[in-house]
Image (tube, rainbow, N blue to C red):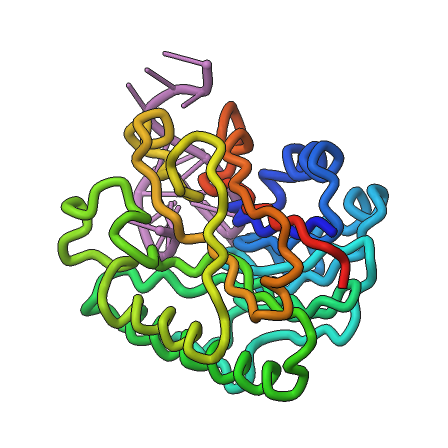
Length: 261
DNA sequence: ATGCCCTATGATATAGGA
């Protein structure tokens, strides 16, 4: 079984590359983030034509998540339990489903913007709702393989950014954000470290300043798996080739290969 | 080489991304 997660930075703009990648990489399940479209505008038809059914959860211009599967899509859950709103809106940042016996969550954790911004406290509250939701699911089905995959918008360690000195006073590397990841792990998840195709662990490179070719990246797209899931994994890797060329997302897909449960 | 920001929006600027 092949599972992947990919922040596509607009499914509309990325559709040609997404379709090509589905054909070449042939994943069974794909978690997408940053659709930047409404659920109604999600391009189901060309994706279905490749054999995937999809649940898309998007409320417009920002965020939006989806799960694509060609091995079943059951028990779909939109949003986290008690997911906090931002500016009065519960944003479309989480969707869960069971695919081929594996429980998956596609998540797009809020950015946080600046450590003293409202968005940052929102980010931490959002993480706690994620932790709580996962805790409940793990308790209800401890033997079911489960993974939370997506754009966590936190680099777990200093080695997960190209130069920690560049991140003074910025989000994504602060202690409270990393503590939020640790709290998730404490519920029984492990951070599955992906194999790199080129000696750097990054999954995101800014569009600006030639960041990709300079190796100025960050590992913020993560795979958090319970032991039942981790025990099935044969490989985890970052498809950085997908960051190359014209019309690329600023994130690369992270691919997980595992034995079917 | 992978090459110096991109996307959606009531749009000719702006907000958000990280």
